[in-house]
Structure formats: C-alpha cells, structure tokens
Length: 269
Ligand code: GLN
Image 1 (tube, rainbow, N blue to C red):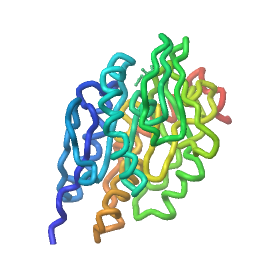
Image 2: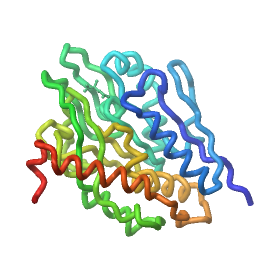
Image 3: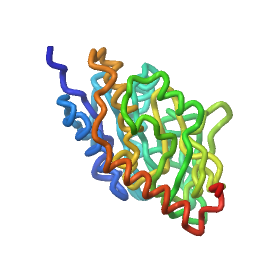
C-alpha cells in the first residue's frame, strides 16, 4: 500500500526564517524523496487555523525580535492544539526565535514580554550581548538514546555531536527537570555560559543551532522522520540508510573548524 504523504507543518515561514532555516525543510523533504516517500509541506501563516491533528512533523525557524513580536500572538492561539499533539508524540523542531517562543515566554531586552506556548518548561530573557559563532555540542544522554531505541541505520546514525551556527541575544533558562538537547563543547548555548544547548520534551526539540541544522546533522533529520513515520504506523522502518558522504564531510569540517578556532577552549586536545 502506498504511504499517504507525510505532512510537515512549517510555522510562519515568511516571518521566521533566518540563516538558512528553510534548509531544514529542504533536508527533511529531500531525505523523504530519496527514499521514495511522499510528503506535503503546509505553511502556517498569521490568521490561519490549521488542524494540527493532521500534522506529522512541526517546524519553526528563527527570527528577529521584530518577527517574533509579529507572530507570538498568533502562535499563542495555536498553543493548546500544538501542546496537545506534542503531548501525544508529535515530533517538532523549533530553532532559535522559534525555540524561545516554544518556552513559557520571551522577555525582550527592550522590556516586552512575548507569550510562549509552553511546550518546553523554560523561559528566555533578552540579554545585552549578542552571542554569535559556530557551535559544537554533544548530544545529551536523553538524546543519545535515540540511536538505541531508534529505527535508523547507516553511518550518520553514529553521530553524537551537533554542529551549527548561533546568533542570539536571548538567554534561555531550562526549568528543573527539563533535559537539555546537548552539552556545549564550543560556543555559548542556552544561557550564554557554554553549558547546555537546546531542550527536549517528548519528541520536540528546541535548539539555537541555525546554519541550517539538519543538512549537516543528518542523524537529527532521520530521528525526526523516524519518529513521524513510526507514529504513522509506517511499516518500512528502519529507514533505508542514505549515502551521507557529503553530509558527514560537512559535519566533520564544522567539527574541525571549531576545534582549531581560538574559541575551542572547551575541546580537549
Ligand atoms: N531574537 C532572538 C534573539 O536574538 C532570536 C534570534 C534568532 O532567531 N536568531 O535572541
């Protein structure tokens, strides 16, 4: 039987798309296409009333404070539906400005408080310093469990690091009990102190990593796709491994660059 198309809901594509975040959607859809799986990308814009019960995967990119201000109230109205589906296991990826709005609130440096949708038990405070640069992080134990519980195969499934680019002034504080996505090896991360990066809640991932994230972190892309397909009852898991040579080389090059940069003080030699 042909698999019905996997529905990827892309939240506010016009307002929340910084530093190549659209590349995440391209990576997801290409990895489906290469495996002969059908998909549909549904853009969710201000004023829309989407049925999140039909979503298989949710994505929201980053944005300037201005863009976040514009979409926050619209996102807030969708919050209860999104939370319900995430609680039911819907996989989601929220990057930077999107990640901030997936917490309880973002209190900007100018003094505005933007409401969040409380997917993550976390909040964000605007900071006076902009944290810009390449980041390398090591997946947390919770995230590293992916590989064992997971129907994935291939060399990229072995990756335990995340590489990307961060550019934010907001500092995100995870509340007690919220697991981080990863531990920062190079860069600033959640609270700008080089400790934790991103957050996990059920199958939702929040992260500061742009760049875009998924093309050079194919293990994360396949994790999201596997979860979405498993939730759909797809019989073809584990996913067929892809030829990820280019992706793995990009990942390795980013690791190497971070290792040799002067910011690499957290890397052990
Ligand atoms: N406006 C937010 C900040 O600077 C998010 C920026 C982003 O998405 N890159 O903290």
